[in-house]
Image (tube, rainbow, N blue to C red; front, side, top):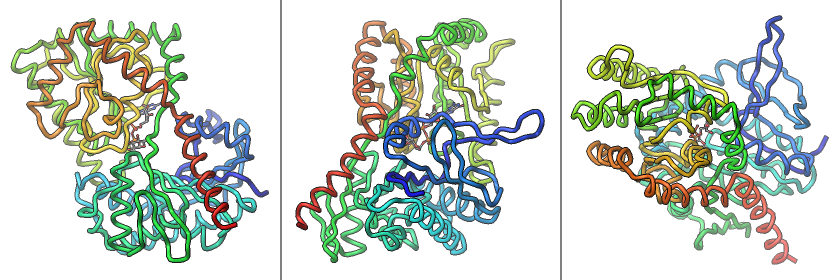
Length: 470
Ligand code: GDG
């Protein structure tokens, strides 16, 4: 069947669940992206192509809550080389300021190309004449051009969820030109921040030699590609509603109680990833306790580290590093029944996340580099009483919008200590002034507005070109 809207993303928005009888079924994974796109998908008879996780082959298309999903299988070797290798051990560190050293392997690149080709083939088969195809993220940067070669009639949009690096770093990539040309197959390329879009346009001028003017690239065949910022957001109303519910309020109180009702609770929630600056923030907190700015009775740190990419070596090393640091800090600073850090290496349901956001007085988000960081926005949306402090890295995309946070440089431990202490000591009036402003920003710029603005822009640019052509 042909569809007017095709979403192409590395993962399908579902998780596999195995019941007691051993039978496996699918459950929709909660996520801002799918809820934002859902109305458009329904209206346009949309379909979503992606990998469902695992190595099962020959999966049939299926429907869940009225959404059409087309699973694309990957072999164990493709998972190792395309997903864990080229996507997560080459591109991910390269695009995040080389916080870890990117690895370059030619066989990983071959697998990346092959998998991208398969995604493009599927999308080409599913799209109706003149349909819109929206491709997502760094795992699929070759898909736009591969798709255009097969289906020049389509409107193709691409959105990058992570940063796009400056030319000085991108240049290291042996396949830099292929990636740029792959992306140029799209009509509209969306980035989190204007700086990323500018990095891309500059690289296209330097490396591919196309003419550019502001946010537009002019291709020799007369086609135009636009590169612009569309900062992603969250389902703000959904989070607010969840945070206002009775069970979540009760759970938040129970969490405080279980922690011994300290004066203040610091909270970090991240995928266990070396870009997120978990180590630095725990060190800063530990030094504040050691220097007796507050005691472990006054202030505890809850750190949720969601297991992530556990087959990739850098992530295993990171896990050991954090385990060691937490053990040392708790050994040095904790008392009986009073660890300084409550460290949870696990993932939780959305309700528990909302309860943690409500329970925490100071949310600490300190990535070395982050495309946006939705956790920071979710915390703000859950602070329905307009209190609580956000300590936020300048290097998270979210810092562009959440100007009233305590902004920090995560490489500067003393600066971070000062900000944590300042947030700890802040008066209620100060907290509410800052939180009100941030809540207004998030309410006005939610994920629905983000998706609408990208898709409208993609459609309008097409209309402009058609008008010029006629
Ligand atoms: C990439 C970019 C960009 C986390 N733990 C649990 C859980 N989560 C949810 C959070 C949040 C999401 O996962 C994490 O999003 P982030 O934006 O913080 O970070 P990345 O995973 O690195 O996301 C990032 C994003 O894409 C979107 O474009 O902002 O910069 O790196 O929504 O709530 N959800 C549940 N249980 C958990 O334990 N249910």
